[in-house]
Length: 222
Image (cartoon, rainbow, N blue to C red; front, side, top):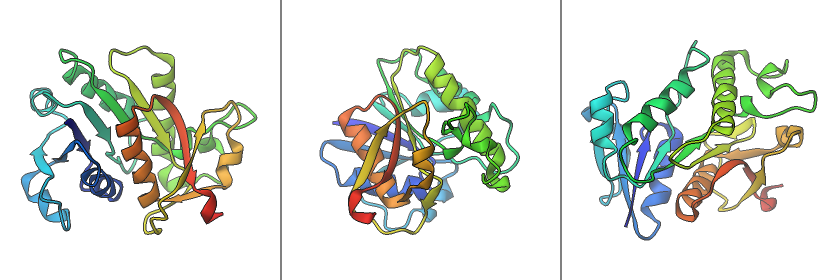
């Protein structure tokens, strides 16, 4: 039985990931909550899903919560005017918490701001990138570079949705998986629903994906 902890479980992506994983065989899903009352935000929670209250800023609490976990899905979505190193800092906290354990895989929900353009810049630097989410776009650029440029004890997967990431889009049950490229501009015109992206995350957990992948809607939606 593979034990999977979902951080950011009450968010839209997190809830859909919980639903996907609960339907997969040989998976014990744990929903990470910031406070106990957050369980009320998880509608129709599958009875097989366990919950844990986790303060990611408290190293002792985080270490205890991650004990005996096989996979961490990092789906926390930071908002507002966040520092550019905020996602890197969070990744470091999680890795520190699992430093004394056997191998723990990390599946990280990426951001389109980190996509590479032909001119060597990233999508967050494009004039069409939404100003409202610019701090998060920059933070994802920093996180992707940090992951790709360093070696870690614990393996990681960074999954990037296209700019058209549709919260209430239908689950079509299909997606396309692209390897990272030096020029990822072709991906800027694609889209995917949160539901189909969550399916890709569940597959990444079960199939032990490694590295950076770009995830878009399947061919049947084109």
